[in-house]
Length: 243
Image (cartoon, rainbow, N blue to C red):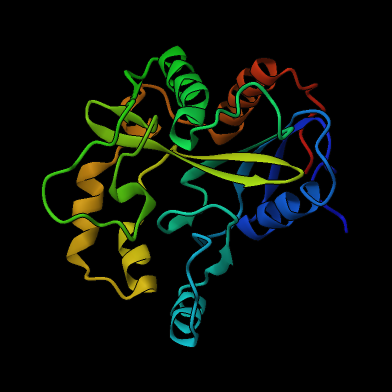
């Protein structure tokens, strides 16, 4: 299997959410002995569903009509619309790494704090929330960005980064998705058959780097700086940027 950047070390990968899920599956096939990190720049849109979701023919048809791939991630939670507006990160740690707490919510702390510090370094006011925060209005739990859970990251009360976790015998996956541009929430609603008015609610609950930064938010620069922070934090060698 020709995976972006192989399976070891740390790298920025230009690919799709399908590539990302293939990399995760491959890297977790064997026991994880050293941390590995990937930051993902998504070349095309994809609907990424939580592990409990069961995509049916109608969903696949709607997604295909919108030019979206569909894939299922190993972690739970609501749907994510990946694409050029989102930066993804995958950190895979040994099963007995000190950052893997007995409590799943507590295990997110280091990752949420790291993302908040990274955003602050960019000049964005951001903080990781230690407990779930309820937004006014309907729950919108079908969307990852419809709620703020343990140690996810907000800027002035609006979600900017979501987190996920999957535990396996061979290692533990921590994932994040950071909005670097406004997301086309209407496309997510259409693909999932949700009411179009939910798109406005999602837009009101979220914010992107581009909306908080004075200078343009460039995916290449943001991905490299995030990679450097995460790889330094987990002690992982930076192996570059595959095409």
